[in-house]
Length: 61
Image (cartoon, rainbow, N blue to C red):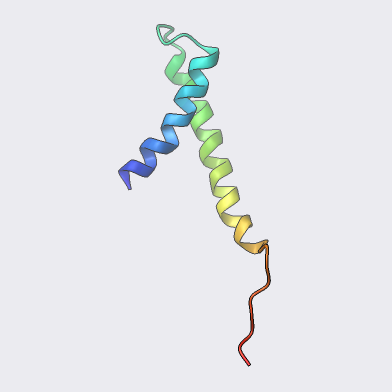
């Protein structure tokens, strides 16, 4: 479970690095905001994507 959290926080840290210097004290604030948006979008995707199946289930006859 910890590796999942590290992956989910690695991506926002990379994105924050594009916009804010790592030496800037606001870097971790920006990274946390991006991480919260990333986690919220991941939750929304996890909730709604299973409802949209690309192929229908087969029924046994």
